[in-house]
Amino acid sequence: MAKTGPIIVLDPGKERTKGNDALFMNINAAKAVAGLVQSTFGPKGMDKMLIDKMGHVSMTNDGAIILKDIGIEHPTAKMIVEVARSMESTAGDGTTGSVIFSAALLDKAEKLVKKGIHPSAIVKGYRIAEAKALELLDRSVIDVSKENRADILKKVAMTSITGKAPDVHKELLAELCVKAAEIVEEDGFVDVRTKIIRVVELQRRVEESEVIEGIALNTGVLSHAPKRIENPKIALLDTEIIANKTKTGAIMVVSSPEERQKIIDNERNDLTAIAKIIVDAGATAVFSTKVVRGPVLEYFEKHNVFVSRPMEEKDIENVSYATGAKIVRNPKEFTESDLGGADLLERDTKNGGGKTFIRGGHNSTVATLVVRGETLQHADSVDTALDDALWVIKSVIEDGKIVAGGGASEMAVALGLSACAPKAGGYDQRVIAAYADALEELPKTLIRNGGLDVIDLSLALRAEQTKNKNAGVDVFAGKVTDMLESGIVDPYRVKANTIKAATEAAIMILRIDDMLRATITRDIPDAPPSHMAASYNGMAPPTMNERR
Ligand SMILES: Nc1ncnc2c1ncn2[C@@H]1O[C@H](COP(=O)(O)OP(=O)(O)OP(=O)(O)O)[C@@H](O)[C@H]1O
Ligand SMILES: [Mg+2]
Image (cartoon, rainbow, N blue to C red):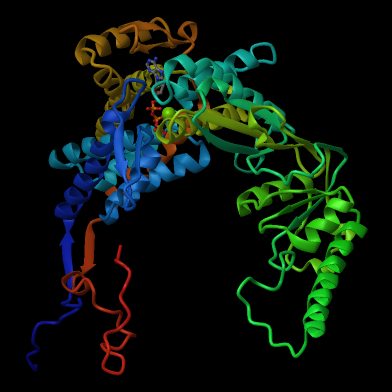
């Protein structure tokens, strides 16, 4: 038989890590991500200072924001960041806790692998533990009734805000969020993303923050605009045509002064005709992204039409959503069907008069939360806290379920799992017990970040839990108390999603036993992709964006 040389199956340009080396490397990456946010967990968590490329500084302890802004490179670490992102999009809160839990699951798994348990056995055990954990969590659920709903919504919002916004404003901000959610609630559903608009106003006090039913626009209006229009017919314009066509400095070639006058008159007539189309369609208020001036403005003023100063696109989109008005780019084709409607349009005559309110939009009920703060950082941190609060309120309105906070639900589930683990026997028993230990990391981190004694308080919490499922750690009081009585409650959705998202990510990472990484582009970070020539007519190729 002819001899053959070694068979090369793999691309030699790929770097390969396999077996436990790959697993442990991935686990370390996951733990490193958790390490980034661990100290921020809980109401006494620390803040991170984030400085962007433009030098803007922001302070936050919100897990999702930190992980998004920090620019994670490692592929496995990115999978953990995905856990935070999925929590943010499904529950709007609980991002830090889920990352910590996922890394804790992997940390416990690493120990089991080192003791000779195969990752597949851990994956199987974690699946059993996850199902059991969700079952146990259901037993800790407290149903929200019609009578106690308002009170619970406020408490759940206050719990999520604690540590994120100044304590003195906690109650007021929670009340504002509940009010905003109740305004837009429809068939038991709250659309936080599109129906609650948040506007940040600086150099004002936080306690001046307010909720408006409808839209509050920061945009000023032209002085002649009417102050109040009932049942306004709203036109939205995003076009240059409404400004004077002839730009300053433009060169006009004419043979006589009469000809010049004729051109100017024609242009005036064209613009007036456009304004007439809009007014004839029935518009009584015009909001525009570009400045309205010249003959168009004169025509609108003559017909008592409200005209806004130039507005941001985002604001125009909000008005469109609330009133049903279409954003028109070619006003020559404006028709009545492009108009939107509302109950009332009003100009703010107080506080410097810089606001316009559109109440009772005919397309959709929206609410505006005007967040006020002394400085940008201040208003920004309040705004981030309100985002979490609105989401927890949404979850509780939609699900009608809460659980006790301060580590109560996690400890109840962990103890339940530890109790049922021996029945599973074999490897499953050890894996389920490891899952329970990982879950206990959450109350322990809360206690540690509160500057309290982890051993003493977690023992006290375990002991109290045998009598009361709602026992948790109040990190401000520094002791174990009934969380319902202390008003520290979390949405069921946040806790259930934490279990699901964190287990899923941990399992995904545990199943990887081989990593093949292309190394060539790493050595030449600025190399153009292979489809691109090395030079163009002797010139260097266009610069590449930094590769991620
Ligand atoms: N006074 C308190 N004492 C103890 N625990 C509290 C108290 N107030 C809130 N908590 C707990 O803090 C935890 C939430 O902390 P935090 O908001 O920092 O993390 P997260 O919600 O997981 O992440 P993020 O808010 O960054 O998305 C919840 O488990 C909640 O029950
Ligand atoms: Mg939170």
